[in-house]
Length: 124
Image (cartoon, rainbow, N blue to C red; front, side, top):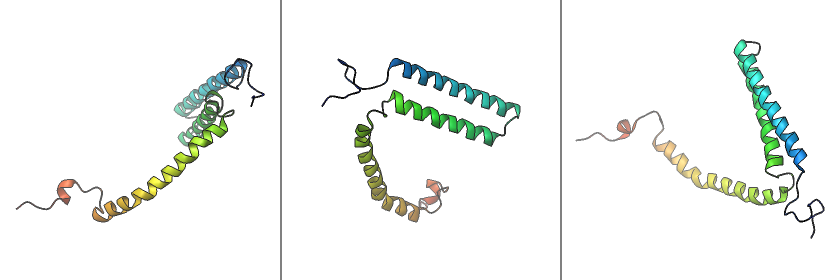
């Protein structure tokens, strides 16, 4: 089956170089916004919480752009799902498999701040 978006003689479908340059420019602008917000927090124009949430939002947008365009997730989403779904299933299974060990460890050592010397039986 021939991909309608593929460039003739090229192995993958994807954007032209102009799209990569626009995304790279957007990432640079978002990075500058993070530094400007940090400066406003340092000077007291914004609170630390406000700065944190703005920088967090900028980081989420930047990560989404990188994943979508530079990692080709927009064009290869079915292939990514083929890898993500089994990983999520295995992660959930691992949680259920390790749950008895976690519960038992908590049962036998209820105070995690206790050192190993305090837990060990006294010497005779």
